[in-house]
Length: 496
Figure 1 (cartoon, rainbow, N blue to C red):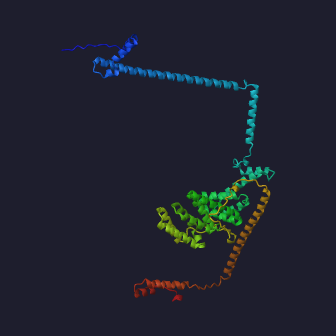
Figure 2 (figure 1 turned 90 degrees about the vertical axis):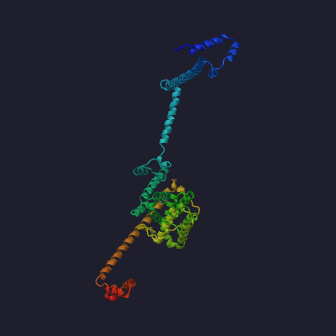
Figure 3 (figure 1 turned 120 degrees about the horizontal axis):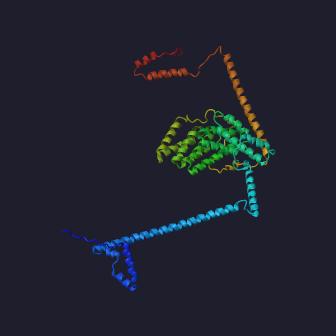
């Protein structure tokens, strides 16, 4: 049996809304309240068990309300964006109009006479101030200004007639600083004597602060050349002890600064330099023992490493001049090795240090070959304790005008001439003495060449003969083997 399906057209949701709204407008307020109380809400109607038509109607009404609300919010956003764009366009137009007005009023054709004169005067003042700034001499600045080639610098010095003026003194100071830095950076084992002669040509008494700073900076940057810088300081110290004392003071202050800051690298470089200065008899051995005692008083891995590096460089010298002191230091190291809780790497370093001492520091000589350049009577040793207060005299590193500049320059020239003449005479005397000794040796050989008789009174051959017999007897199992070995030996007639 076929069922008949009836289709009911309920109309669109918009028509239903219009009918509902017109009906609500026709009712009085009291009737509206009564009807609202009587009719359930769409949410309640959706969950009710009414007919299929009621469910479909409530569902469509609910979703239509949501879509209309979303459309209304979207239209509101669009209106907001339109207002914002209009506002931004208005602002752009205002800025553009302000720029056009500014260009129009700032053009020279539309400028008023008073305003133009005022602006021209301001421009003139700015130009003069710029010229004044540009006219400042770069030599008189704190850092010396831009780089000036040496030839141009000499030409500028020659153009200045007043040798006592500030500009001339500043230029000579810059030339002195560049010369000292260049010479210190070029020094090595082969050219150290030439570098000393060139350094003495400069006024290192006036530039003693520059010289000290250059040597310390060069040694800190290249610790491998510490023995070369120590030899350089030893030569300068023999002629100018105040410069050697200044370098040693700054070195002690650097070591104390590095120790307070736990800066291992600064402590390593400073202690190594002090050790080589002690080897050159510039510093006293008491300073080295005080530094080692400080490093091993409260041992850490870094302090022990610094102390071991220090002992390697100065151990042979301390063994000669203060054996009791170096024994106490090694006893302290032995105690640290057995009692303290230190890193395994540091324990190996201490054991290697004992092995180096057992070998007699053969890889760490007191003064390397070619750097023993100062005679013992010319050496000047500074007794500077570790804990005293020292003035580094940093004011000597910067330029200061000297009212007696020419007088001091003449004094240094006289002193330089005496030092260089003395050095030349000593070198000539050494060469003459060496040549005379060679001539005497040649003459003696020529005279005694015909009859040469050597009398050995050291009994070396006898000792060797006895040792050979002793070893043959001790290495034999019985008398027959011993006799056989002795018979096979060939002895000269003088020993039989």
